[in-house]
Image (cartoon, rainbow, N blue to C red; front, side, top):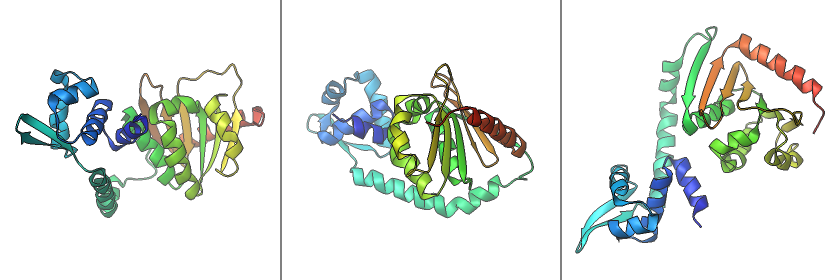
Length: 248
């Protein structure tokens, strides 16, 4: 019933259990720890430290009732305001971040990212790097298993299109990619499907002078290389493969 809300809360930074607890408290303001445990199916030993963490983060609050501790949820609008405040503060501080990051562009750089947050950071970089085209090789479905189809369709694609960034993809023949093909023209995308015998555990994105390697959901790691020469050879390899594949 609350699957969509849980997905949004995960993108906000909550774990599955934290999201379930927040929604349960939101639905029943003043709930007791016993009732909360029953409604979330989380035993009390596990529940207590998670609740304490949510209280510290201002997601929920505790008050003392006539029959023990009770819990109330922060207004969802308050959570939204925190995001907007963070975005504003981050934007204002961006020149300072950029000054710290500034290095010689001739020096190759390698960054390692772990977990879903790492995937999202690299995908966000593809949209803000200034590259006019993104090349993608691999499985769209494998990437979606980490970042979610909702993020790709409701956030990533609209932002990419708004920024005027084209997208060429060589992907496995999967239902998600097939479903997007009719919208390729509107979404600045060109799709070709790899041979049905193709199998990939990792995916590659090439943009500007950067190459991003996304490992499988099992490893959950991204390697981002900024190097003109590496990006050039990977782009050339992509184009060679592109020319051998038929149009979708």
